[in-house]
Amino acid sequence: LGLGNGCGLGGLNGLGSPPMGLGSGSSARAAMPPGNSPAFMEHRPEPVGDPREEAAETLVRAAPPSRQLPRTKKSASFFVSSPGAFSSETRDASIHQGKFDMCSVLQMQLRQDTPCLVCDITGGQVMVTNMECEDFFESSDANGRLVQSDIFTLIHQDDRDKFSQCLAYLMVSERTRMDPQELRVITRTGRMRSVRTEGEQLIGMWWQLDFWLLSNDDAPPG
Image 1 (tube, rainbow, N blue to C red):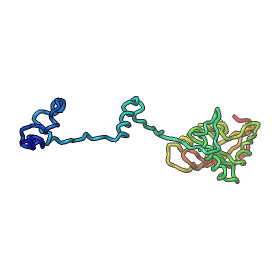
Image 2: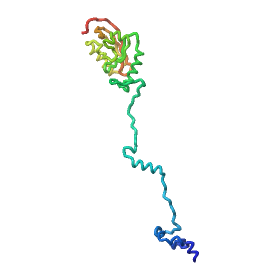
Image 3: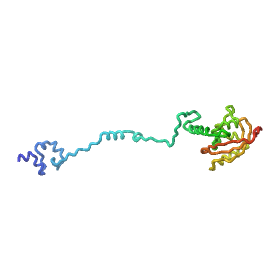
């Protein structure tokens, strides 16, 4: 009987008696749930999480709402300028660099045997000319070069409506060539000349206009 009490047989036969030396403490009996035998109690350690994940979650919860999920916004459009581009008060290199590069390309491709220029027919701005055209309209640094000027200032006032209607038709039609037109032009020195002009579409609304002299008229412009 003494051996049975010492080996904790009471815990095995379901009587609930703890082994000698283990159940004598009142604190051990108080911590043990009622109705459970210590021989069948199973120790289940609580799962231990990753300390790095817990630290990361703590930082996310502590961060302000505006900084929890940083996102970068991409621009809908962008323009990459050339390294030699520069900006000034009247020129934004990010906008105009491509246009001026295209003008340089067209400048080299213009024919050299006939006065011709490249014009943006949407607004009438002269974009490119050749030297023959500058000489034909008698332009100089003193009276103003043709580039960036309004092409309608080169057309006689009595023929401007006719020329304007011709350009308007080219804008709405799908034609790539302009029929020959006869009209009068005014040089930078004020001389009037009768010319024949033809046009060819280059890029978008940029057209090349060629001029052939029909007659000179030194009378003052009407």
